[in-house]
Length: 305
Image (cartoon, rainbow, N blue to C red):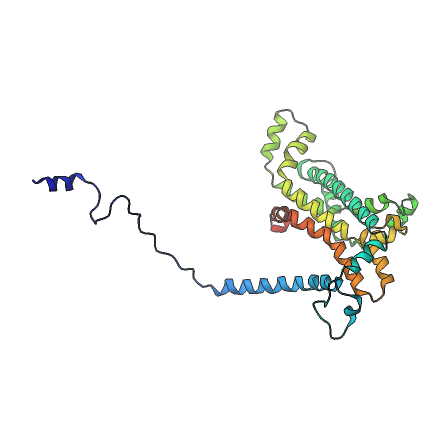
């Protein structure tokens, strides 16, 4: 056997003329298959998004037009001259900042009270047994089916009796009764394993500690969704604050803007500017907490769980 043949047997590298430094050949690329269904779904989604954004774009572009161009024929999408006169008029011509504070105050207080009271009620329905539980829960479900407009007259009579007309509590208290949120939270609490609660009871934990340290931390997604939906609903609520508040010092933003819009007449730039200003805080809220909203909806009864 020659020396050359001995080196060939001792070398474990495969023959082919390539050394160790030669990179391996890349795997063959896979071409994405064209799926007509995915393309159709994308087109439909884009069209729906455009239909949803068109009114918002029209409101903003109208708000930055000179007042004379808002009623010009033919109508134009883009103004010939961008101006913020409508925003200056809305901000300086009324109690805008006071109404903004009233909306923030009432929406925040309502949200906090709804989260606290509804989580406690849902925990009671889900984890405890007491006489009349089924009947009380059935009444709660019936409350979901009662239109809020039916309760306006008795609620207003009650506020007059309690001397709460033109007060913050008169706006807040009737809005904290939300049977739908109790139902959503109760369905979520039913899905939490009872073994965790039983282990805590064996360790000597009380009901309040279980509720505060076990149930609430595990329910953060649904609580975040309930809080955000409650805040948005309270912020946009027009009918009840309009009825119970006649003093401009206690008006919320939707009520106050509607009051000053009635004085604008056909001044569409100011009307659109007030609408943009009223919706801007909600847009910022959704952008900041959209992940919590999606996670909350995915974990509530709305997703079939």
